[in-house]
Image (cartoon, rainbow, N blue to C red):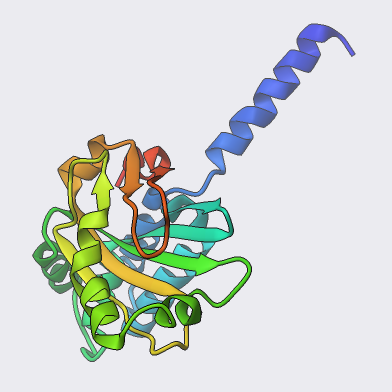
Length: 210
């Protein structure tokens, strides 16, 4: 094959791959398109939103494994949070949905999970601390361990207690959107999970168009 033809072919394949890359915009557009249908079904909107989120999941997640510790940061779109809040509302308009979305403010929300590749992290950590001390750490003290570029702390923080059903630890956190979009790393300072500071590249999330 002629070299120029080969080069053009490779560039074409590259462009197709880039154009097919899942994006947050695809997720949001899928919800907006549901409101344009003549027969509007709220349960359909929730299903479409969840399916689209799962389909584009890779564009909402960054993770890292270090010494058997697996850390996953998953961006939770405000649309999903708003739809969950409206789950007991049998009928709602796009205006109502937008109003709930607006109430979440200029914040990016995430689930931050810690698990172990080799053991049950929840059981391991629980065995090292007295119950009262562990709850104090998980519910408040550890929040200062999570920072953007070693500077910005979460403005929303909540420990998701699963009573051991989940073999690790999960936190619902939020950072100011303006700070998050300018950040390059999520820093996890030394904590009950890690003996040394861990840095996670978040540019794929921070630079994503919302």
